[in-house]
Amino acid sequence: MQIRDYTVADFAAATALWAACGLHPSPTDTPEILAEVARCNPGLFLLAFEGENLVASVIGTWDGRRGWINRLAVAPGQRGQGLGRRMLELAESRLAGRGCRKVNLLVEPDNRAVTRFYAAGGYAEDRLIFMEKWLAREA
Image (tube, rainbow, N blue to C red):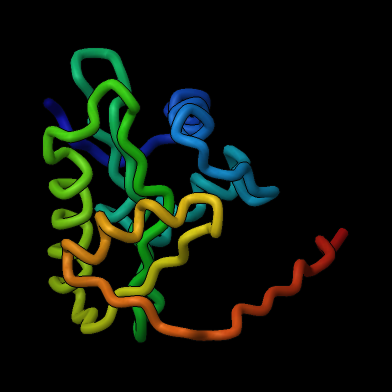
């Protein structure tokens, strides 16, 4: 098992893994935007490979105040072996190394079953009202 940082060459494999795991595609899942996420968060956008096959991912981000976990995914055939926990703990450790004291994550309603996994890792549900706004791209 090799865990390494994401590169733009991994775009197709990463988005295919997310689709296989039922994660919803986002307009921000583009090669350019994901490359920028990796550039701004070195050592936090991680991929795990078995040979040439991408088997897991996690995107950690740090804004100087809060850490975030996104796109934690384990290939269906690799689940139940502790790989998700390993990826999560590695991202958390690297966030803590940057001074992060609180990590947030969001779970889509149709993926609610995954909350058991996160609860086992010490995460607790917090009742919030989530709001969003997509900004128009400047020309």
